[in-house]
Amino acid sequence: MTNDDSKSTISQTRTKLWVDILIFIAFLIAMEPHSSGLAIHEWLTLAMLGTMIVHLLLSWDWIIETTRRFFGKLGLQNRINYILNWLLFIDGTLLMISGILISEVALPSLGIQLPTGFAWRRLHDMSANFALVLLGLHTALHWSWILNTFSRYVVKPIARLFAGGAKKDASV
Amino acid sequence: MKTLGRIFIICFVFTLFAGLMILAVNASGMNAPDFRGDGESRPEFRPPDGDVDGGLPFLPEGERGERGEGGGSRLMFGMIKNTMVITVLVLVIVWPKSIAKKKRRLSQQN
Image (cartoon, one colour):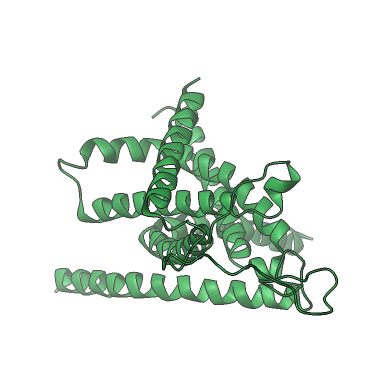
């Protein structure tokens, strides 16, 4: 690996961490439409569609590699992870499409009126609850990555900052 | 160009699944206006006497887009509740795994 490659990997990992934190917080806010308001709920989730694409692009190599090896040699955890990610994608699609079809603020403000149905409202609620469980499992399966990356890119730089400040104070 | 191609693939798969879901819901008849499925049509909604603007048949004010009173604290409560659900799931999976790892390490040392 050249110096440029390793720099790019570090920057990608850091970007992925911040994108994931952003998605996590946005998801928690989006899960409470009665408290945040329907306008925030709808616009935030539409914006999340973009961040989800970035999340998938940053994991692209893993997706392709695991798809190729899925029916061959692949560890159990990777296999479970892959299936879970597909479930999350399908559930996310259902959540998004049902949300678009029952939209009361975002789409009407763009001049788009869609025929609403009772089923989509129920499917939206169901898929949202299912997404919470799937997100929990997704987080659990990536827990060591989250801990390591958070420690490397958030905790250690902050600790270094304080240590640097303390050294300066000591020298004065 | 490579990134654009990947974005196109993601959007294509998303649209494909979305289309299939819409087809499935419409084909199953779940989305028909007659949601009880007993053949009778739903009775027309009539506002109560004296209700000039017709009122809202479904949800009270504050639950239809507007932030009701105490929205901030309710939002915080909801976010904490959902974080707790995720935390429990993480603990249920990560804890046994880390215990098993520690046991394996100990047995290797002995």
